[in-house]
Amino acid sequence: MTEARIPPKAHAHIPWLQGPRPLRIAVIGDVILDEYLEGQVNRISPEAPVPVHLVTKTVHGAGGAANAARNIKLAGGDVMLLSITGNDEAGRQLKVLLQKDMIDTSYLQAVQDRPTIRKTRVTSSSHQMMRIDWERIHPIDVQVQERILNGLNSIEFDALLISDYGKGVLPTSLLSRLLLLAKDRGVPAVVDPKGRDFSKYLHATLITPNRKEACDALGIDPTDECSGEELGRRLQKTFGLQSVLVTMGAKGMVLVPTAVADQTVQALELPAVAREVYDVSGAGDTVVALMTLGLAAKAPMAESMHIANTAAALVVEKWGTQPIRLAELEEALLGQPKHDGRKLFSTHAKIISRESLRLVIGEPAARSKRVVFSNGCFDLLHAGHVSYLEQARSLGDLLILGVNTDASVRRLKGAQRPYVTEDDRLRLLAALSCVDHVVAFAEDTPEELIAFLQPDVLVKGADYDQNAPAGSPQAIVGADLVRQYGGRVETIILTPGLSSSVLIARIKSQ
Image (cartoon, rainbow, N blue to C red):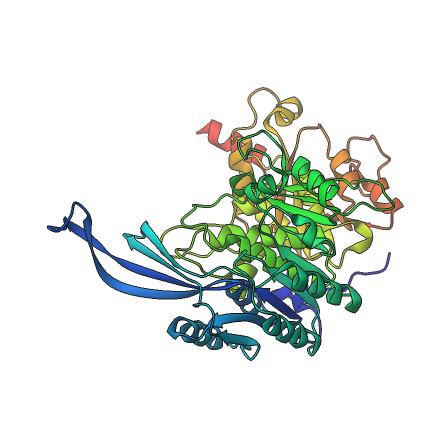
C-alpha cells in the first residue's frame, strides 16, 4: 500500500490549510451590522409601565454575509466580499470591522436608496429583551447588480458562497448569473438559502437550509415529524437541486448528496456535538463558510461536514454573532482540551458512532491520513494503558479505539465486570490527547468494526501473536483482513505488572 503523506501536525485535520496558498472564497449576499446594547434594568419608567434599560456597553459585530466572510478569513481562508451597504454611519462601522480582520472591502458598494441593515439587540445580563431592525427590503437596481457581477467576473476564486438573507442583494436574475459563472469556472457554489422558491438555487453545488427553512420551502409544518433526510430528498426532487445539507439544531445535521447516474446516494448524518448553548446567532454562517472552504479544498464532503459540525458547536457557546477562529477549531479537532475559565470541553466530540466515524476518516482510497486502530475493554484505566496508547498513536496520524460495551465485557470477563461503566470508560479514553476518536462495539470481537473502518494499522499488545492462525486464543482478530487490503499489523510490549486484572486483585486483597 502506498504510504500516506503525513501533513503538518498543527493543521492535520483542516484540509484547506494543506495547499501552497490560502484558498480564496468569493462571498456575495446581504451584510448586516449587529449591534448589542448591554445594560441593566433596575426600575420601571415613571412615564409608562415599561422597564428602564440603562446601557453600560455597546458592541458591534458583522452579521449575515459579513459574518460568513469573517468565518472564512479567521479560519485560514482568503475572502472577497461583494455586497452593498447604505451610505451611512452603520455602513462605515461595518467596513471598519471587516478591515480589522484584513478582509478586502473594495467590492462593498455604498448605495443611496436604503440604509445599512442593522439589528440592534437590547440585552441585560446577556439575555435579549428586544430587537430593533433597520432595513428597507427591495431588489438592488440593475446598475448595482452589474457591478457585483462584473466584480466577481474580474477576480479569481476557488469557491463561491451565496449568503441569502432575503434582503434584496440577490434578485433571482442576478443569482442565476452568479451561479452560472461559478459553474462555467468549474468551482463549487454553496448557498445559505432563504425564501420558498429554492429553484433559484438550481446550479448550486450545495445548499445548507436549517430545518425551518427546508419546511418553509416545501410548505410543511415545522412541527411535522419529517427527518432531515426526508426533507433533503424532497428538496432535491421538488427543485432539482444537487447536494442538500439540512442543519437540525440540537439534532445535528444531515447531508443528502447529489444522485450519481440517477442512483440515490446514501445520506450522511452527524449528531450535534454536545455543548452548552449560549447563543445560536451566526451558527448557520459558520456552517456554510466551513463547508465552502472544504469544497474549495476538494476535501470529501463528509470531512467538511464533520469540521463544520464541530465549529458550529463552538460558536453557539459564544455570546452574540461571533466567528470561529483557527486556533480554537484546531484545538477542538485535535482533541486537546483547553480551560477557558469556566469549564473543560472537547472530550464528548471524540466519542462517535460507527457510521459517523467512517464519515470523519473518509473512504480508505481517499484518505490522506494513516489511521491506526486498537481495541479493548479498558476497565480501570491505568498508566500501562496510557503508555500503550501513546505508542500506538505514534504509528500513524489518527488513533481510533474500539471499546467493548458493558454487555460485551460481561460476556468476555464475567458478570462482575466491568467495574467502570461504558459511558465512563469512553469519556476517560476520549480525555487522552493521544486518542483521536473512541467508538463502542457490542460484538464479542472487533472484527466487524475493523472490516467497516479498514484501518491502515491494526495494533494489539505483545501478549497476542501476529502470526498465530485465525481462531486461536493468541490470534489478533482482524489481522488477516488488514493484511489482505495492504495494511499493517503491529504489536506493542506492555508495561509489566500493570493490567486491570492485577489492579482489581490488589484492591480486593486490601
